[in-house]
Length: 308
Image (tube, rainbow, N blue to C red; front, side):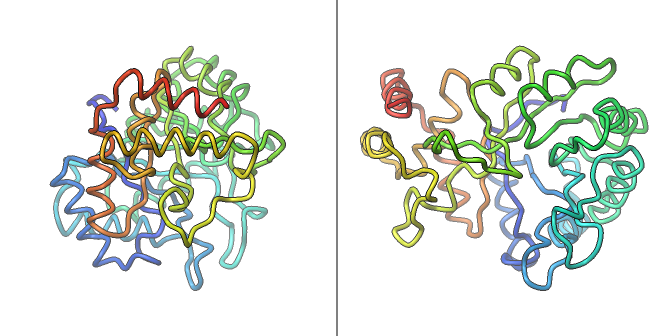
């Protein structure tokens, strides 16, 4: 990824399933018009949706790229490793991150995306059944073959990120983990997700790796009364954190979800959010949020509220 990235990535998890392809294409058109040209997908989105196979998001994007002839205007990221090995399977049957599996999955992704390369390939969910050297080596081979510009990891611990960065050859350019303003209960295990916690952020900073976050808006729970906060986030300190968030949001004419996005890109350890949208208005809202300046005092208040 040689060129500067926009301050957010467009999440496409439900493109071609919950978001019909024609509607998704309109959203992608609008994203390009805004400047939101970083598009995030995976080779298993969204296999869990009724009737889906996991091909849908990549196929949807591929059709759009061909019909609009906009491949040169998009920074395109996909992921390999967490695709079930057969229809109806789940993550227990994932194809994994062996060298043959990585190669076959990315070649299949390129066919669905209808392009000869992507800009970033993530190892989607850490596969500890395979030596890290094998997985990273397979990803590095994709770079050597010109199938991807850069490589990365997702849902990976600080220790595994640091170990991967110590290997010779092209290094991970990004790490994508779960992250939002509210902090979950310390005893909560978000598996198969891994939190973008302070240890991962420190490892990323030391290795000059871009921190990227998924699940940043908790499915709309910050703003929608019909979307309650997930149970792990109902903990002591949540009320104080939400109060600080609401105060900063009101001061900047934002809603709480927008304030989360504005904070993420301006906090001392900045994080690039992936935002899944299903309407142009949602995309515009997110784009406005990441371009809203927050004062140092507001960022400090949010950091203090989050730590309460």
